[in-house]
Length: 321
Ligand code: SF4
Image (cartoon, rainbow, N blue to C red; front, top):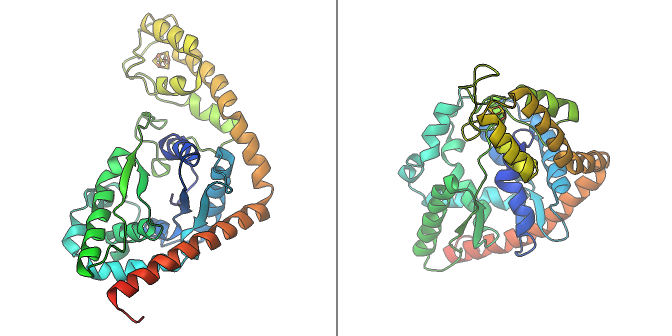
């Protein structure tokens, strides 16, 4: 996860919640991808340090357990950069240029010049991130599957060139992600300024829910609405009890309930649902030294694995060994 901003509910339901479950079944490596954040924050990298801390706090508050999973900071393990460089020698540029998100993101992010070499090459760094830990599975959403395909191609190319199965071809572990848009109905994103953050206070959550776009066809209180197209209803599905969801679904369609009341019901259930995280977050962020120690310990554990894999790769290449 990139520390390019505070984590929001989209990050939680899109990844973090699943990560917490996976650690019960798998030997998981989760890292804060601060080098990747430089692709968008290279003009002001000072913020990345603070976001790294905040991401770690959100992980721990959500239930990522350093006893069960290895959690670390990417830039503290130089083997990521070294393997990125080595892999970049064997990857043809057209492979990177055809990456569908390369052009998409360049068009989407207007505030930063995204024409850097680092941004073009980020799938190579991503591949290094994965293969250093001999990862056989990578938890991704369906939209990220093409990235993983590129990593698999890079692995095949490297192993084929040096005639040794150094790296494992990672498989995607696709998780179904509940549809959750931001306040304005677009994808929840810090760059759209439409996110509810895991670090928001009760007051901020209330204000944001009140400002949320609902069914755009429901111009007046007396117009019936449609929860199936309403931007707010998916939040009820996540936070409100089933009876309340059914009641709102029925009353919205007959205009028996107004959006203002519906929002207030959501505020109550959301604050109750987010309460334990908020509480835990306050406790953990009050102990920054402990958070730091967890990251240092995880990083040391991860680095041993990374060093071993990199040595194996250089040996296969017969390069300076
Ligand atoms: S009443 Fe609730 S579900 Fe219906 S349109 Fe308004 S906010 Fe959406």
